[in-house]
Length: 332
Image 1 (cartoon, helix red, strand yellow):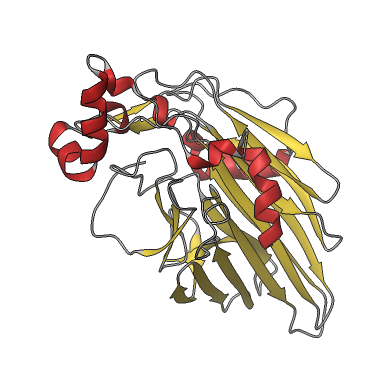
Image 2 (cartoon, rainbow, N blue to C red; image 1 turned 60 degrees about the vertical axis):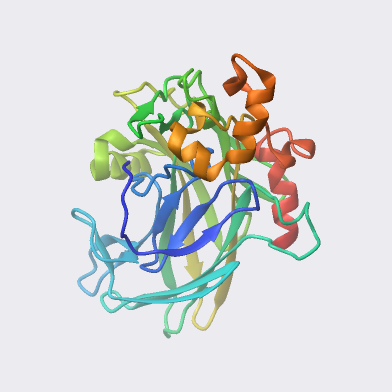
């Protein structure tokens, strides 16, 4: 992961005051600022991506990233059409060999005069698949999310990460199933960055779901190995510098000629700490510009005031990332 300026921007997804992730105009995940790292967001998270697996004209299986442009050995889409209508982001992904097209609508509630519905720490993704051919269509959709708990920036914007103890747990409910990302000890200097994520999908007959984990440090080879072997139980815990876990929702999709499938997916996060000082990765100059009200309040507390935990509005309603899902589903 890294911090960068001047890259393609898109639509931020996430409730007011909750942090956000961004769907970029090139169709990929961009800025990730849901670790209370809004002053120094991630702009490269190699374990966060969407992809499809298909057979090309030669009958060879290949993975195509749902994005414009290639990444390592993997090809991207041949064409991307992006439309930004905040709080919606709408993308059409298409390629020629194999012939494939899918639509994605990403959304987060932002409703005037509805504070609770507009401050949900999460977003929904709705994929639409159509089979316009005269024969059955089979493909796989991969949604990968990197376990970023324990990762953030210090006041000088140097990265500090401690993924040690991070865990990924499969969860199945009556109508939904997916993964919950539980935190380890994290970096004690970065309490803002320690928390949970959840990635869930609606159960559907035409989209058989498998769950995997993989080590981002192993790159594309590690991902291919994971989806080939299935989900080991239990998944190994993260170890900084050795195992940086990511979780994958793997959908095996089968469509008859002329058939259409709508596949809703929800991502949520839950970061229970919110410190506005150095723990948020802000130096004194940045704090004076971006958080003067916090600085004044902390001065009233006296020595050690930088440790004041302001929390989040959503903590009044939810106890974790999995609990957020119940509200996000109302909009799916």
